[in-house]
Amino acid sequence: MENEYPFTHRRVRANQHIRELTAAVKLSHRNFVQPLFVEEGLASPKEITGLSIHTRESIINEIEETLRKGVSKFLLFPIPSSKANKDFNFSFVASVVQLIKLKFHGEVWLACDLCLCSYTQHGHCGVLNQQESKLLNHETVEVLVNYAQTLAKAGADCIAPSDMTDGRIGAIRKKLNSIGFDDVSIMSYSAKFSSQFYGPFRDACQSTPQSQQLKNRKTYQVSPLNPQDAIASSLRDVTEGADILMVKPAALYTDIILRLRQQTLKPIAAYHVSGEYAAIESLVEKKLVNREAAHLEVWTALQRSGADIIISYAAKFAKEWIERMEY
Ligand code: PBG
Image (cartoon, rainbow, N blue to C red; front, side):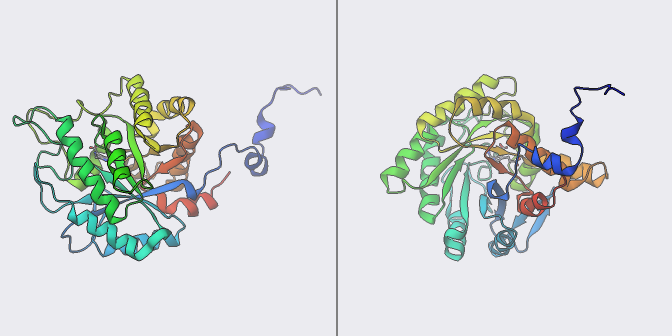
């Protein structure tokens, strides 16, 4: 009998061998970055809304464990013990960076998030005016340049500004070069959208905006309704000296990853943020998805869209999960 479906696509789907052979996307744990939180004055590690917060001591154990699992790249977020609105003190994070580098040297690649939101009383990512109605660009960049310098001197491999002010990439690059840290790279949160999906992170870092006048971050983060702004800001950051661009959140913005991929040769990092991560974890809790398979599917989508680097709260499981992935 003649085949009723001569145009079948099911031959390439027929078994795991052919599905494996035809897999164009190949995930590797080598492209993953694990975020790490460290809190000043914390007595023992804790968990807040599903994110692990470490002490100066426990972060070392956590890095050791993650290295044993084959993941060696980290993105560090400090949570200082006291908040201020000026004269910020970056010595805690500097001491943690030093500690990590002293212990692990070149075994780890350490990127440090650069932002003021966990330092400020009002929870905004930079310095506000007196009335707390406006984020001041110039004043913020000045503080960030100083902060970046502190992190570079402490031994950071990469500075990752997440504040979204203008001109900070150029100013930081210029400063680092002038003091002999031209080998420290910059990963710019260049396409960072004003999003609902940072909730768990803000709980963990106590960085929810508090100001009555300025209730959210819409005057500095990119509007989800304006994709061109994300692309233009990213290309602007390239001209200022960014080595790596970032799209954040990731899974909701794969269109941006794809468009950016088509417009730049720079590496692109996709940050699957805390709320996106928590969304999967709550489906897991309800037994509605398989945890590993769900994260692998998201990671696949990010890489398929053009991301080179994946920042994920589950990064430390990447090797294990990718190895036993079912095709
Ligand atoms: C700080 C910063 C945020 C995140 C990373 N850096 C939060 C924010 O903009 O409020 C979010 C990360 C996450 O949700 O996982 N500017």
